[in-house]
Length: 565
Length: 61
Ligand code: HEM
Ligand SMILES: [Cu+2]
Image 1: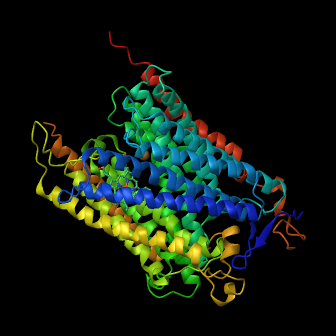
Image 2: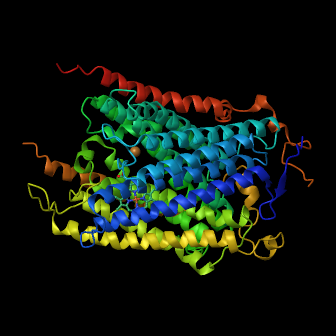
C-alpha cells in the first residue's frame, strides 16, 4: 500500500513530508508574513493617529491606512497562513502526497495577484472604503477584482485540501479516523467554503456595479451577504487556531486531548453553528426581525460558544494532564509553573488560549447579545473585542506555530534565541493592552473608524470624558509595544529562513525541539485518561466567575442608560 | 527513500473494519457530509432567511 511520492522523512517527528506540500507551505507562510508586516505597520499608523497627542495622519490617509490594515492583516496575512496550515494538516499529518500540486500553485498565484491588486488599489487612494467596503461607498474596480481573485484562489486551495483527504483515504495512509488536528482543519476548510461563496455572491455584483454594469446594490442585502463572508472568515480563524493549539500542545509537551470524542463534537458544533453568528453584525440594522437576530446570535450561537469553551478547557486540561504525566505533580499549579515558558511556541500558544478566552471570548458574548450590543455598537469596544480574538488569539497562535515550522519545515535553526523567547510576551502584552484599552474607550462611547475624537471641525461640539483620551494615549503606547513584538517576529522569521543554520538529521537528537514522541501524538489518536485536573478546574472556575459577573454588570449598565419607569 | 507507512497492517485487531464504526463516527469521518451541513445550515438560517426578510420590506412610495 505504500505509494511512492517525492518526500522526506522528518527526523524530528518521523512524519513523511511530501515535497510539494513542503514547498507550498513555505511559499504560503512566507507571503503571509510579508502581509503581516505591511498590515502591522499600517496598524501602528492607525493607532498613532488615534492617539490624540500624536494624531499622525491627515484624515484621508487615516482611512487609507485603516483600509490597508484591515485587508492586509485580517484577510491576506491570516488566509495565506491558513492555507499553509491546511496543507500541513492534510498532506503532512496524513503521511500523504498533496493532491494536484499544480492547482495548489495556481491557487497561490491567484491569491498573490489578488492581494497585490487589492493593495495597489488601496494605495492609489481611490479605495478607502475599509475592508468591509459597504455600498454605496465605491472603490476602484480593481479593488473588488483583487478580492475576487484572492477568493477564487483560496477556494481552489481549500479544494486541494479536500482532494488530499480523498487521496489519503484511498491510499490508506492513515489508520481509523483522521487525527484531531486534521479534523479541526476540516472544520476550518468547510467554514471557508461558505465564507468564500458568500464573498463571491456579493463581491461579483459589486464589482460589476463599480464598472457601471449594474445600477445599484441594495445596502442591506449587501450587509447581510457580506457579513456571511466577513464574520465567517473569523470563524475559519477560530477553527484553525484551535487546531493549532492542539498541535502545539502535542508537539511541545506531548499532550493528547482530554477526550478526542468531545473535542471532535465541539468541532462539529463549529461546522454547523459558527457561521450563522454573522447576524451579530446586523443587530442594529432595521428591516431584520428580532427573531432572525436572536435565533442566529443567541440560541444557536450558544452552541458554538459551548464548543469554544470545550476547547478552552480541553487545551489547558490536556496540557495539565500531560505535564502531570511528565512528572510535574506538585500542588495545583506545579504543571503550569514548570511548563516550557521559554519556548516561544508554547508561551505564544498558552497566551493565545488565555487571551482569546478572557478578552475576545467574554466580550464577544456580550457584544453578540442583542440588547447589550446597543451599549457599544460601532464603538471602539468592537475593535477591542476583535483584537482580542484575531490579534491576541489567532495571530499569536500562528506566530507560535511558526517557531515550529521554521525548524521542522524550513529545516533552519532559529536565530536570535533571546528575541524568540521574549517576542510572544511583547506581542501578547501589546495586543492585550490595545484590546483592553479600546474596549475601555468604547465603553465610554468613543466611536470606531473615526479620525478625530475631539470633533475639532464639527459644527456641533462634543466632549468625550478625559478618561477616554487617557485610554487612547495608553492605547498608542501598547500599539508601539505590539509593533515591536511584530517587528521582532518578522526579523526572526526572515533572518532564520535566510541565514539560519540548516538543521540536519543529527539535530533531532542533539537539540530536540519537540517533545519526545510528539510527532506520533499529533498524527495519532487517543485522549488523556484522567480528569483529575485541579489546576484547570481552578482556571475554568475563574473564567466562569469573570464571565458571569461581566455579563450581568453589562445588563446593569444597560438598565442605567435605558431606564424603564 | 524507502520507509514504512502507517497504514493498517499486520493483524491489528479488527477495529479497522467498517461495520464496527459507530454511526456518529461514521458521520464525522465523512468530510463531504460535513461540508454539506456546514454550508446548508448557515445558508438557510442566515443568508436565505435574512434575504427573505429584506425582500418582504415594502418599497417606499
Ligand atoms: C501592531 C498590532 C496592531 C495594532 C497597533 C492595531 C491597531 C488597530 C487600530 C488602532 C485600529 C482602528 C480602530 C478604529 O479607528 O476603528 C485597528 C483596526 C483593525 N485591526 Fe488592528 N491592530 C494591530 C493588529 C491587528 C491584527 C493582528 C489584526 C488581525 C489579524 C487586526 C485587525 C484589525 C481590523 C480587522 C481592524 C478594523 C478595520 C476597520 O475598521 O475597517 N489588527 N487596529
Ligand atoms: Cu463577527
